[in-house]
Length: 218
Length: 249
Image 1 (spheres, one colour):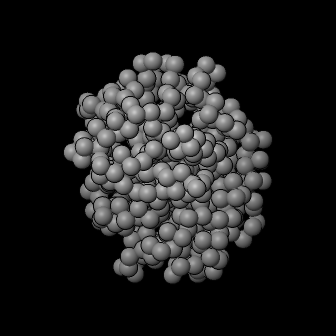
Image 2 (spheres, each protein chain N blue to C red; image 1 turned 135 degrees about the vertical axis):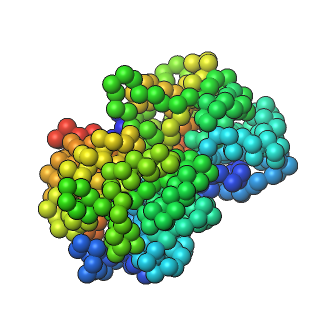
Image 3 (cartoon, rainbow over the protein chains, first blue to last red; image 1 turned 60 degrees about the vertical axis):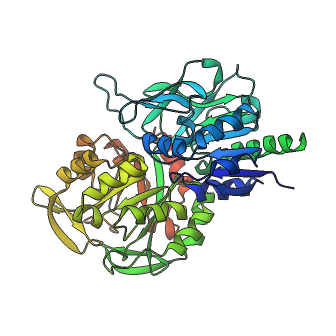
């Protein structure tokens, strides 16, 4: 049986794009929007297109923040994509200073051009990922994905984890930034796997396989 | 470094992909779903889907075609045509669009750029500008190139970015469908004043044209008929661009 994976609908995500990609990768997708439903799943995905502040407000209002934290502390699988990745961090500087879920210690900051540099913002398009050789979880997350593969990004802010050991990949856009993290059951990527063609689908397949293993052990 | 994107554009009229010259004389180029599927396999970096008559005919975009197209592409999909409100944007994003392109509605109501970018993020809002030469500059046209405005293209592009546009899709109406190259001067002038990605559109006829416009600051290159009628394969084009020192995926 395909593993059941819940995608959280908080009014901000490109839900259909994510769900059709996960289905293609062998997941059985339910779209949920309330905190109680999260408990029923071993695996959840927090997608995201949008601004940080309205997103965290909605999560907090609906009690999704607490439910997500419980899910993660119960060692269940979690994947955050783009804004859903940024929301994991302690705080964001997008339109002021806003507190995040604080699951990964660190900040979300804006790309700033260096002196005399013409820097295109948003960082939009296909860019390369350098895969970490030191992070252990990264082997599962990036199984069958070559180093320096191209994936699709669309964002103006980047994540800066305090603890560098969780960094799964690095990407360069004026500076080297953390383009994904892998911390045990918590996976997060700044790029959009659901929009990164074969490479992205492989990452989602890796996530689905991991969810399968988790279901099997229950 | 971020790679230059190669983007096939699907101009859709009544559920079919069409292509004209200088915005008129539309020719049938096939089923949008099938074409999008082919491009996804061929290595397109993104697909732009424009319902070109939606705004002039005052009808809502055919969501069903968008949905079916989105099912076939695992690369970014930008959708435009007939979008007037933030709710229209949300409906399209839910149907599978990743970015929303607005043109006529942005000119009539610039607040929409601001509202859309506040709600969904700057990166989600693409402002499409149809530019036509007039004297020493270019004027903005709306309603699929049918209505002339008194807006200067350079100033309008700047204003769009100030309001929150995350990308500019810049089409030269003079060059559109002519196949004698992009309007390089237009591209240079616009990329000089904005720091968001600019997609070059209108006039691509051969491989060299893509190199020329990248050198003028384009972040992405768009073409329609060249790809639809198989005069140029996306994979061949990308190979050629790479050989000429342009970073592509």
